[in-house]
Image (tube, rainbow, N blue to C red):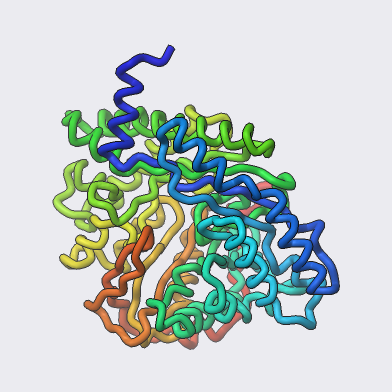
Length: 452
C-alpha cells in the first residue's frame, strides 16, 4: 500500500531535487516505407510517423498535468535511415533527413533520432552515402539526430568507418559553426549500440523491435545526491544500499509513466532506461553525487571507483522497479550538461584522459566534450577508436560525442543553451595518430566474442 510519506517524498523529489522523466520516446519502424522512388518513400515515412505519433506530445502533457510528474522531452526514434536509403542509392539521402525534420516539426516533438547507419562489420547499400551526408543533413535540419555504430564485441571495429567518422564530426561542426557547432552535438558514434535507447542523440529504432513501442528515460541525479547528503552513510556498503533504494524509487516513477503512456497511445511498452541523466541545473549533477560520497572534486583519485559503485547500484536498484529495463541504463557523464563536471574541468581536476578511464565503468562514453576547433579529423577518429576499444573489450556500449569548437581554443567556452548546457573547450593529448588511423581495415573481435 502506498503511504502518505512516500507520496510526500516523491513530491519533494520533483519540487526540490530535479526528479523528472527525461523523455518519452516513441520508436517507429520504417521498414514498410522502403521504396526505390525516394519521393514515395519520404511520403510514406512522413505519413506513418505523423499517424503513429499524432497524440504523443498531448499524452505526455496530459500525464504531467494529471500526475504532477515533469516529462521534459517527447521524442521519436526510427529505423536506421541507411536501410531505407539503400533502395534508392542514386538520390541524396538528405531528403530523408528533411522529411524526418518536417514530421518532428508537425508533431511538436523535441528531437527525432535515426538518421543512422550500422557499419560495425562493413558498409551495406545506403550506408556510405548516408554517412557522407550527415554533416549536410544536420546543418539543414533542426530536430534530427544522427548516430553511426562502428564496432561491436561480436564484430570488432570497422576502422574504415572510424576514419570516416572523424571527418564527419569535424565537418558537422564546421557547417554549423554559426550555431555553436550544434551539428556535432547531434551526432554520436557508437560501439555496441543498443536498439531501444530513448536518449538522444543516439536513439534509433532497432530492426529487432516491434513496429511501434514506447520507451521511457528517467533521470534524477539530484535525488541521489540529496539522499546521500541527508543520510550520512557510515561506509561504502551503506552508500551502495542507499543508491539502490533511491534508484528503485526513481525507476518506479518511470515505470508508471511508461505504462500510462503505453495504455493511452495503444502502443506496446518497450523499456525503461534508468540512466542518471544530468542537466546544467544546480544540484542535478552526477559529479556532485561522486563528491557527496567523499571526493573533494570529481576527477581526483578515487573518481573511477566511486562512479563504478554508483553505476552498479543504480542498475541493481532500478532493475527491480521495472518489468522491462533496457536502453543504456546507468550513469551518464556528459561534460557540458553537468554543472559539477564543468566545474571540475575548469579547476583542472578533470581531463579527457580521466574521462576515458571513467567510461570503462559507466554508461555510454565520452559525451558532450567540447574540443579545440583546429583538431584534425584523424585525432577525432583516434578518440573514437580508443573509446570503441573500451566498449568492444568490455562488452558494453560506449560512444563518442565530441564537438570541435570552430574558431575556439582550450580554455574558452561554447554555449549551447537548454539541456545541452555550456562546455569549456578541453585540451587534447599531444601526438599525431594519423598513420595509425590511415591503416584502415578492421580490428578483429576479441576472444570473448566467441560465446556461441
